[in-house]
Image (cartoon, rainbow, N blue to C red; front, side, top):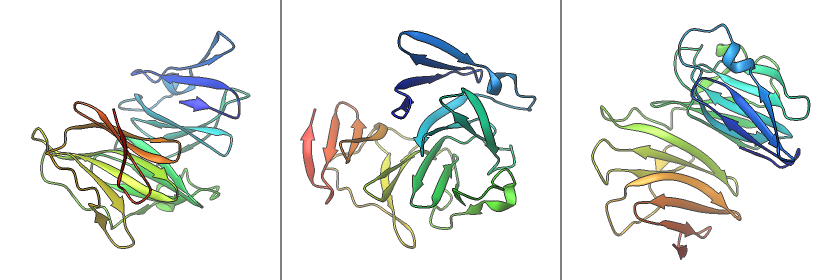
Length: 208
């Protein structure tokens, strides 16, 4: 994860260890690795918001101060029972994605450590067996969700609509999608065997 406010790069590991790389120096932040919790401490995603680093882990979301290199807070959308795979922000909302659910909270709610302060997003339905949600990304105030199908070519990128997930991208093939991300304010979908960048109206801007 890139910290623009601190001009540093954060690297997360399977065991929960976290390194901060700045000016060719590595600073270790072991708080997640050392946490006394059951289950996985794996770091799944690192997202910057409002000058802090939010770490999606196997048990919670950990908020890190990238200057002091210390934990500011820990949020438990799933009460520690399910991995948080990805995090996104839009306006005053924080989104926490698991394999089969999307949780929402209010960013400035000081009680987000309490699982009851999170809401299940009814727009994100249960998927067929062996399918799962993998990533979430906010681009120009639109939220995109990547769903991975069990069979090859069965992946889909949805837009989080006002009442449901909407499939707005019309691929001319059965997509196998590795990941999604933002490139200069545009949606990039990393397919096999290349990357397509989409304009705001979801027409193709470029393909690599």
